[in-house]
Amino acid sequence: MSVVPVVSVRLVVRTLSELCITAGTLIVLFVVYVLYWTGVKADSAADHQISALRDRWARAPAAAAPPHGGPPAPAPYTDGRSFAVMYIPRLGGDWHKPVLEGTGVKNLQKGLGHYASTAPLGQVGNFSVAGHRRTYGDPFKDFPELRPGDAVVLSDGTTWFTYRIDNKPFRTLPSDVGVIDPVPAESPFRSPGRYLTLTTCDPEWGSSHRLIAWGHLDSTAPVARGKPPALAG
Image (tube, rainbow, N blue to C red; front, top):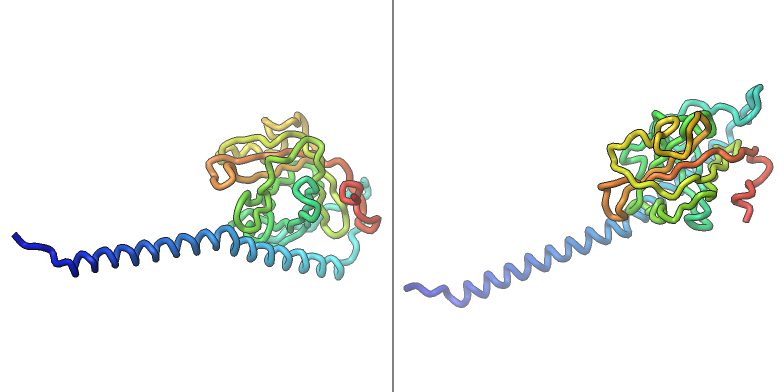
């Protein structure tokens, strides 16, 4: 009968220990990346988007209001380019994020993404926006706290758009694409109007479901008049 040398056993144990330590270190580094570093990158990217937006707004000529009144129709949006800033006081006094055209992975790493198939900001239809619940700045981390009457304010550099939330967040499956229809069947709306849809993942660290909040356009005002009442406080 052969006996395994003690040296060989020690070598195996030491190798396994080193592998466990390496694996543990990699796990810790991955967690730090997900929880911290993606947020740092996203916040920096969002700040850059907002700064670039404000520079463009400062150089752009004022848009003329349409003859029927209301906000002017925006120019076509460009995929991957920001066109507005969103403010949601319920999510924090200083909460504001850029809105980019398109909901691709790279766009959602820089801010929020506008579903390209939905209405432009402030226009008749359903202006629909997606954002991460967790990672990349956690923009919609507190999404479940939204309540009817909460303000969602957007600026495109010339006009303030104040929407009001009409429902507590609604939970559904990712396949339920009807939530961004012009008049979503499960929303509080029954006829065409100027609507808002916000979407994010659920549960907080998963993506098996979606949370949806719907709102309606409550008011508009020129940026030149100063902040709207929903942000004045």
